[in-house]
Length: 376
Image (tube, rainbow, N blue to C red; front, side, top):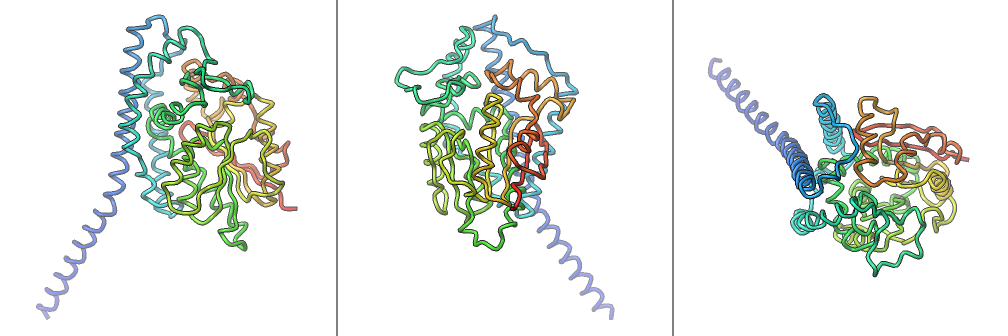
């Protein structure tokens, strides 16, 4: 009897040790993700601090007209980012998207393009000094683009119209948002997958999802990881960014998304074609009237019962504690339509187009509108 108890106790101890080892293996990826994001955040902070100091030495007159952020607000920003990253991890564990997507960083691109970002900074500072916000290289044809698009958004060289801009864009935005850009993009995946269950009677291969203003294809790549079998589409005005998107999307398994160069004010698709429509970081760079036009086009091409999801910047009344951050943004970056955007009621615009059951969410400094097209 004593021997049996001793053996049972030994087995229980061994079982507990095994559970402890397993739990350590379970927590290791989470700690790795947290360490990766912390490293990105610290790197972005260091880059912005050092580049600002250099700019102030060379161009002391280029001080932006902004109010400094208090230590309390900086802490709130960090807490908000941590909540975003926690949600990002939770969704990966819930199977919304694979865990390896959290570690999908191209270090080759980082080492290749970060020096070019640094080398381009004097060009940006000269552009700011001379107030040249519509400056493009001579070889870039600008005739076929709407005037509102011909801007050096973020003061970046050649706006969205050159190979250099396309190569630098994703890393520039990662630095801007402290390494959280993809985590904000991934917030569209849970509602997208959830709402597409309305079409469960249709084989996944027959479902169609479009990313409007797809840029370099980052959002399409994320959607492909979460929905590996659906047919994906992307449209953008910039041929340079579409070439970058094609380069990125060719590297992942699955059917290659169909990419089209075109103006999202006139989507070249038939009515009621897509089961899901997404649009990430576009609306704050559109004039008010164009926002309405794009929403109406997205309504037209979305199937009855389908979903339209917008991800963009937070707005004026979303988080009162972030008001200073929002007001500083257009002063720090060239965003000519941002001041109107932050007061624009996109829910009303969506309802005017015909969408209903509109839900809004806020994560860190991004806002989401999840709108449904009625089933007729």
